[in-house]
Length: 344
Image (cartoon, rainbow, N blue to C red; front, side):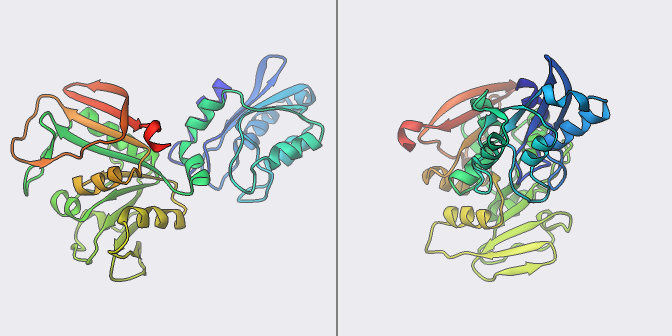
């Protein structure tokens, strides 16, 4: 199952809104085939695993083999045929599963189909690791909202910038890591002031991988069309109070000012089937997510050798505990998780 997890992670950034899945076929203690879900809409992990084993001349060993897979095999027709049917067809007698699939069209149906076919099924192997692997997918299908990551960089005196001037806080290594983070999420969100002050591209130009869907709050639709966020490459969603509709690569999603903008955004992302979002600023927007306990991770980059004096204060973290930290040069990268005693 450890090998299945390794394989599955290779699909990060390419398979959403599907989960990352890895599969391994074992015969008498030796791996005879392995595969992972590589691209959304293409073959699932089990299919690639079986096809590799066949290509290597091991089809005759299937009746004496065990398949290991991180997630319950699907039992429905979606973009591809059911994987449970494929396992049954090839007479694989035993399947070991990491975690059950919460997606309503699967959710135990794959396990049931395998068992009815006489296949021995074991579940819950490295379940914690398998759940962590697909935390975005599980959050979306159990809590009915996207997985939310808040990210910002701040100085040693807790400032995220100076008035009317962009401040470069994090170093080149941290910047590259941020672009890796972007490649792992479906969408990235900023507010009006950040769009105007920084004019960010919100791409993954420093890391291989797909750029996320760009989200921006522009309540009065006053942001200039020349901003980089509105570049024709890639999809853009604009949250505003003026109009609803689609123009070229831009979706305009209408919100109201009398209801929490945070929850309106989360509901919109659920509507768009977007399972994860990286919120990059500014401070007011980040603080709104914190104050409403509408987040799953906080990733804070702190330059320990830079001070800004009078500047824009960084968000104040509440109801959280430090999970881990990483040092990259002068940057301290801190990872926070919600305080479960408060959330529960």
